[in-house]
Image (cartoon, rainbow over all chains, first blue to last red):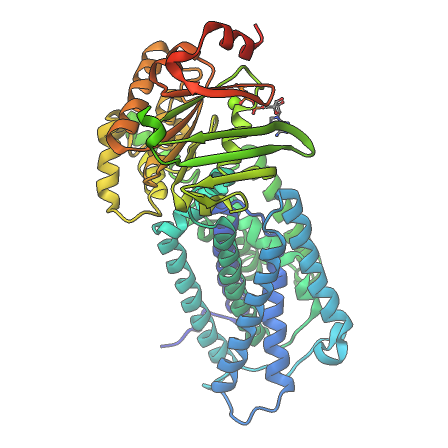
Length: 316
Length: 238
Ligand SMILES: Nc1ncnc2c1ncn2[C@@H]1O[C@H](COP(=O)(O)OP(=O)(O)OP(=O)(O)O)[C@@H](O)[C@H]1O
Ligand SMILES: [Mg+2]
């Protein structure tokens, strides 16, 4: 089988869609179900990416790949999970404003630390030396296989989120989001439920970060800006925060349009791609957020169950 | 009196609580047995504050709350719920995004008995809810959502139920229905009930004992049959 139609732009674009979809799905659990606006997605993702990268490149492992990858990625996942534990604990009793400040502050702190500790992270110069945990021939083949692995992980996340929706744990998350005060008198600790959510979601964000490190093979603190948080948030909110498929639909319509359609299929001058388009992308994602929140706060797919349910009840 | 022989479910001593340094409840002492214990009082008397304090949603600044002999004054609300205190707040007693059935299920997160059995009991108590079970709670009428809130609390198999003005704003027909249901819950399930009410006439019909709250202070609890109009007037400061 040949994948000639897949040039490296298209693979990168697809990878970016898959990556942001994964993050948006996890954000959906926090923002869509539990109404916790986590603006620090990039922080957890970045910890995963950098912990993985530094361990992979700087530590002298006595064994090679794929074990080296697996061990480093596992540690990176745990590190992000622990960061989730810390942030989850900090925001336990905060309102929306407080959560915004703490999560945004956390993400900024991660970027500052990665910049300042440049003897470890490479700082502004960046850090190379990462590679795929396998070699099946050409770079494109490796990238394609890695895209497949990442898709599998994101499919796993999708399945987990889908299961959570139907589980008592998911109901508890929705209850906490809908009426936290009342949820506190339900007989199960709401703080523990929220903390667990942050640990799991952050750990998975960390794993995605590590996988991103492998794909880009070069760590750059420019990746630790607000871009990816904004992309995940814009996609999720456009698709519908309350629905499992909201993240998938929304990210295709935002990141997909920019990183696949515009990058690969529009005959635009090459220099646009390095200068104008990234800036336009941020601006349009931000604008999308504002417009959707103003005119259709539940996104394309609509409110949790209300729309379809009311149609069923009233026969409309 | 035979009631005196019943063991205390809830013992409150020297209770003070309020908001941000403002003391609303001032040194309340009372005991609730397995009975319908009604707290009467005008707007702002402190009924909601009292029930929320008993549900441990508002911290106390002094005094103790003992539930079935155990000091629960410092427990987290979910722990008192797990021990058997069910709470139906005055407002927003349901989870708007969840369906009626899901509201009941989430109430039944704790408890030993089969959840299906408990759900069936709630539907027997409030038959309307059976038809509404797939509807989101946020779209219910006022009376319907009170039933869901009450059913949700009953799903916890509570030994003590705190009901905060369950009939406020309901039509007379619903009010009668609700008071009947409260009596039924107490009599058939043996649940002790603390009922906050403004509607003195109705409340006195179902109550075993009454405590009148006025500006955060209580006139001694007494048998419902012995409450005089004069005492009510003093309580309500009419
Ligand atoms: N969150 C709050 N912060 C500050 N003060 C409050 C708060 N909630 C209630 N209060 C005050 O506490 C007092 C008692 O209020 P509470 O709600 O307990 O009265 P209530 O007896 O339940 O009245 P109603 O019959 O109107 O429900 C009132 O003076 C009220 O203004
Ligand atoms: Mg009140």
